[in-house]
Image (cartoon, rainbow, N blue to C red; front, side, top):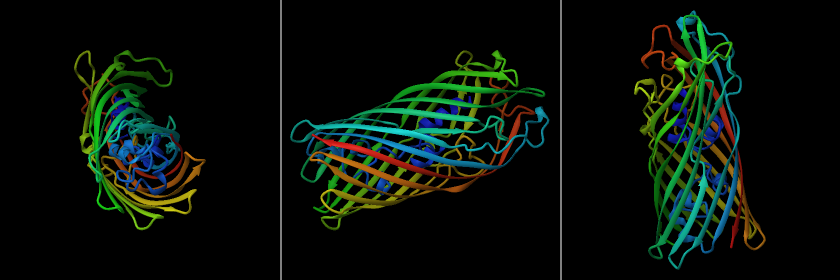
Length: 440
């Protein structure tokens, strides 16, 4: 059940980045901002307006109209999350109650690689076509198997692949429009300890997947020769996750048929709306800014259902708020070969408070500091590189949940199965990105 929940969560906004680190490196919750290396250096400020290379098709497909030639771009983003818990937890009463044994879980974060690939080409004097492949959502946290909070989560991993064909149209010398369709695949794995009965515990792992369709639209307005405005929207994507729950008894690992079997869950990934501005103060300096709202409130409660009987296996309450991301940055052309970049961003968490924060997603507000550069390679190539350090605000947690094994009871907290995790998280994220772009 939890597995399905995580997967749903990640699918909903999967920005953070691959791991919990990805969690911080991308966007709030489990959304990933890292959709190019060319934008990392300025914290993705002005991403919906700058139209620097083919990666513009993700941030605003209208930007393809501002690129003169065909382009191919491929990028790799290495995201490292440092996330550590300190605190206590209670054992379910059915297992004796009192303080839970075990440590603080060790390093809950980790390192992952998020790739991006884009291809665009003009299709006439006003039209351009493009294809992007990327990962908009991801999550990866994993604790020591015997940590104190194991009854609320041990492993949470969610991955997505987004295939996004796009088209742009240059309506006039000052207005460009664009749109695209997204086919997105999501996989999730969630595990945790569960109560199987008096003095008996086990482990449950949920693996589930699904695919879904969405769309995106954008427009860019050339206000003057020096100023460009961009607006871009990405739709929600609905998922009906399906998979299996496998439960075993501790410490033998014997399977428990009554707590195993098929599971489904409906989840909706959030939409987003971005406003960007790019202003050239001179031939060398461009200032950038961006404000993006993500509709995380679409992920409120996820019901995990046994498809054979229609009964609930679990209910996962996230109670997210919508969240904003604000960024500012600049690009300075040092000479014909080098461009330098820097940026700052504030990424608001959708998590309301310590009573709704989960061990699977110990998210909080984060602040980005980034820098990078672009180097000309030959006549038609560029190499972009960037680094960002993301400061994650210390996050308190005081969450109580029922940990009855799936299929053993209704999703309401069964007597003797409740557990509470109390404490806090300290964390940060480091992101390194490299991108090669070929103009042809």
